[in-house]
Length: 484
Image 1: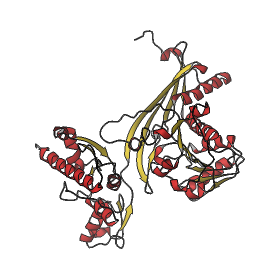
Image 2: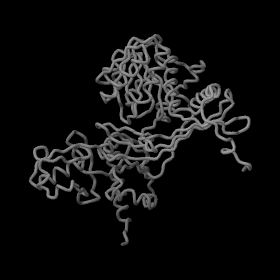
Image 3: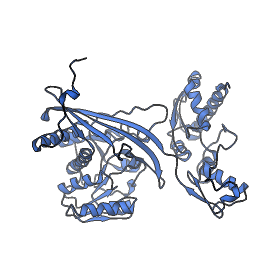
Image 4: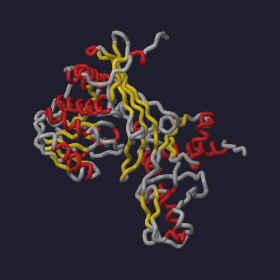
C-alpha cells in the first residue's frame, strides 16, 4: 500500500507556523521568536500517533518548505506541555486530555488541530477477564493520572457501566521506561606513574519514573548480575599494556574524594553538620571524604527508601565514629547544615533552592538532581574543567542528561570556576561567609576527568605490584608483531 505523507507535512507546517505566530503575539514582546523559521517541536510517543511529525521530518518535507525543525522526544505529554509553557519548545504533539487538564489547572494551552480522530488505546487483561463486566473489583494500570490513558480508562469504564474508583481501581504505574546502550570512555596520560590509560564503561541505562520522579538506573545485566567498567593502563616507555583494572570501586572513591577536596577549598571552614541526599554507591565515599576533612558533630541522611537509609546508617555507624541520623525528608536533612552532598541517580530535582541558607555549600554529582533555583542562587559554580564531554546518540530522541545539560549556558558560564584553578590560587574561591557555593557534576560544567581516575588507578597498580596482587597474563596476548 502506498502512502502520501506530503499532505500531512503541509498540514503540520501550517499548524506550526500558526502556533509560532500566536505565541509571538501573545508574548507581547518584540523578538520573542526572532527567527520564526527555526522551530523546536516535541513528540511524545514512538507510535503511529507520533508519525505525522517524525515521518515528514525523516523524509525532509520540513526542509523543503524552508523550515529548520528540531525534533525532541519527550516521553510524557505532561512533561512536553511543561516544556512548551517554559518556552523550551514552540510546538508539541500529545494527547488532548493533557491540554484540557492544563487548562483546567490554570494554564493556557492552544490546541490547533488533531492528527488522529480516535483514541489509539487498547486495554489488555489477564486470561480470566474476558468481558468488561469482569473488570469489576479489579485493578487497572495507567501511566499517569490526568493523562491520555487515565482519560481513556475513565471513558471506557463509563461506557461499560462501571465507575473508576468504586468498581475498578486505577493504579498509576508511570511511563514506559526508555532504555539505552551507553558506551563511555575517558583517557589521560599520567607522567608521575609513567602510564597512559583508558577508562570505559559498557552499560544498559534505563530512564524510568519512580514515585513521580524520573531517575536513571543501570541494571547489572551481565552474567551473574554484574557490570562492565574497565581501566586499561599502558606504559608510556614501551607502549605495552600493563594492567586491566576493575573501575567501579576506584570510580566511587574518585567522585567522593573530589567532592571532599572541593568542600575543603570552597566550603566554610569548620563545618560541623553535613547532609547526604541519596544512599547509593557514591554516598559512602562522600561521607568518608568529608569525615577526613572536618570534625563532624552530625550527619543527616535522606533517601526516598526508608529501608535504604536505615541500612546505610547502620553500615556506616559501624565503620566511622560519627553520629549519623536517618531523616524522613530532604528538607529535614539540610536544615542547619553547612554542607549538602547530592549523590543520587534522580533526573528530577531532589531539593529546592529556596531551602538553602547563606553560606551553604552544595556538592552535586549530576545536573538532573538540581533545580533551577539552586543554580540561580549559587554565587559561583565550581567545575572540574572547562574541557567539555561530548554525547553522541542516534535518532531524534535524546537522553534526559543531554536535554537538561547547561554546561555552555551563557547565563551560567561567567559563574563557573575550575577547581584546579581555585586550589592553585589562579581563580577566586569563597570570598564571603554568606556565599552559596555549588560543586557541579555532569550536565553543569564538566563530567569526571580521565586524569582523576587514571591517577588513582596508577597508584593502585603500584600498590598491587608491591603486594603481589592480581593475575599475570602473557604480554603477547595484547601486542602484535606488526604495526599500522
